[in-house]
Image 1 (cartoon, one colour):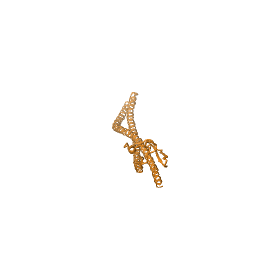
Image 2 (spheres, helix red, strand yellow; image 1 turned 90 degrees about the horizontal axis):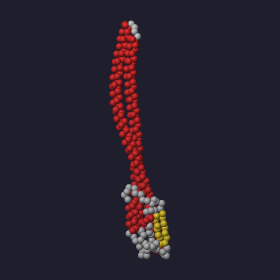
Image 3 (cartoon, one colour; image 1 turned 45 degrees about the vertical axis):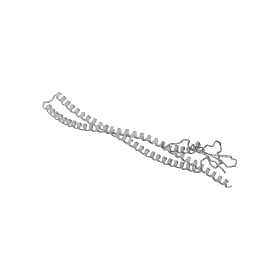
Image 4 (tube, one colour; image 1 turned 120 degrees about the vertical axis):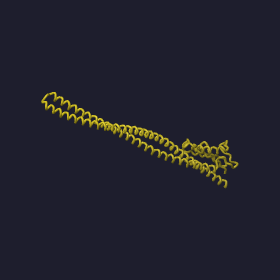
Length: 290
């Protein structure tokens, strides 16, 4: 018994396959239509057009065969215008290869997304550490300024004490008294004043040395703060850029998964079409033997 099997080329890649069969001598036509749940659009993962190449190769194979002008193909001469079993097997092999490539792409993008995510986490930690170091250095600068102010206040207190002692001596001298006592007091005050002067000079010298050290340290700390600020800004910018890379890779990974699912659906469709064609061939051969 003759049979005819034809694919609807416009529907094969959008998840729909139509099989036309003749199963009786009166040329009655039976239509078996299979629908897929795959996505109608084609996902291009890495831009190499493998899916489009697969579709174009299939369309070229279909276009090389003459189209029927009726709802039923002419099979009287024993030549089938639809795809043969060998062609279906070839399409199945192509679909399986596409599925394997899609699986490799999906795995590759998942691994890349994982690596970039780890790098993003590391950059965020680095940025946080840099900002923490900047805050620590700013605290050290504040402490240095505080010590500088304390030394300045101590020197000012020493100068005020010397002035107070001189004022007391002047008041005692003006209040009158015994000349000998006044002279002794003056000598004592002079010795005390000299001691105060030496002490103030020594304190002033120490304060100047420590002040220069503090100023030098403050300059170093300021340079370090500036450097840490630049490092923190760069780390923050790198973290933001890495987050964008993660988003882009995740999008590519989603597209790869969608392409893999679509390729799997095409393999399933071709397998079903091949099974139907093989069943029709078996039935046809059995009826011919009868």
